[in-house]
Amino acid sequence: MKRILIIEDNQVCANVYRNKLAVEGYQTEVALDGETGVEFLHAFRPHFLLLDLLLPGMSGLEVIKAVREDPEFSKLPIVVFSNTYLTHLVQDAWKAGATKCLSKASCTPKDVFEIVQATIGESGTGFRSKPTAERPRADSLVVEGPQDAAFQSDLRKTFVDDLPAMLVTLRATVQSLVSASDQAAQLKDIYELYRRLHALAGNAGIVGLNLISKMADATEALLRELHEKPETINLSCIRTVASAVDLLGTLFERGLAPGKQEMPPTEVLVVDDEPISRRAIVYSLEKARLKSVTAEDAGGALKWIEEKTFDLIFLDIDLPGMDGHDLCSRIRQLPQYKRTPIIFVTALSDFDNRAHSMMAGGNDFVAKPFLFIELTVKALIHILRAHFAVGK
Image (cartoon, rainbow, N blue to C red; front, side):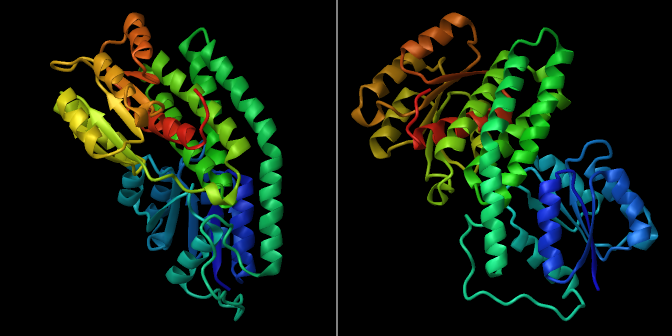
C-alpha cells in the first residue's frame, strides 16, 4: 500500500485530505507541525509528502530542506500548498526541492488525489473509486459518490455555521490592532489575524467558497508581509486590513451562493504620469489576475473612458495639466461612472488631500510608497463591494 504523509497545521484541511486519500486506498498519516512531520519520516517511510509551506515553528521551507538533506528521501515527491500571492515563497520552495506547488485557496481534495495518482500511481490496494461521468463544478467539493456528496454538504454547513463566530473574532482582533499602543502589540494582533485568515482561506477553498477564499488569501499575504517587515506597518495598511475584514463579513452574508463563486470580469484603468508607479500598480493588479490599461494624463484617461467601461480606476492626484481631483470630478459627471470605485494613489498623503479626494468623488486613498500586496487587496475589496452592490 502506498503511504502519504500530510504535514498541515489546519486540522480541518488535514482531515479532509486524509479522508479523501484514504477512500482512494492510500495509507495516510498526519503531522500538525513541521518538527513532528520530520520525525515521522523514518518511522512512516512515505512514498509522497503533502506539505503546507505556512507552518508555525519549523516552516514548510525548512521541512523541505531537512527532507532533501536526508539521502533516503532525496527523491521523495514533495507537493506543497502556498498562498497564491506569496510568489517569492513558492520560488524558494522550488529551489529547496519541491516537486509541485499548489494554491491552497483554490485546490480541492480531488485535485490532490489526481496529483498523487499521477505522481506515484495507484494506491497498491487494487481499490479504485468509481469514475464520474463528467468533471464536477469548480464551486463544489470535488469528491465522488453519494457518501462523499453527503460529506461535502455536512462540511460546508459546518463551515457556514461557524462564520458568525469567526467574524466576531476577526473584528475584535482588528479593533485591537487599530487601538494598539506600540509595535509589539500591533505585531501580536497581525500574527493572530494572519493565522486565522490562513485557516479561513484553506477551509473556504475546500468547501468551494472561492470568493471568501480569494479575499482571505490576499489579506493573509498582506498580514504576513506586515509581520515580516514591521517597518511597513502604517495607517494605510491597517485601514486596508480593516476594510478587508469588513468585506469578508459581507461575503459571509451574501457570497455563499454557489453561483457567485467566481470573480466578476473586471477592467481597470490606471492613470499616473510616473512610469515606475504605473508599472507597480499594474503588477499589483496582475497578482490578482485583474486586467488593466494605463494612461499618463487626464487626456489619455478620458480617451480610454470614451472607448471602454471600467470597473475600477486608480488615479494619481499630481498629474500634468488637469490634476487628479478635477479628473475625478469630470469622470463622475458621466452617468456610467456615478458609482465606479475610484482609488487615489499619491505621495500627497496629508489629511487635506484625503478630504479633497473624497469630496472630488474618490472612494479610497493609498499613499505612496505602497506595498504591492496592499494595493492588490484594495483592488479586490472595491471590485467585490461593487459586485455585491454594497456601500463603503
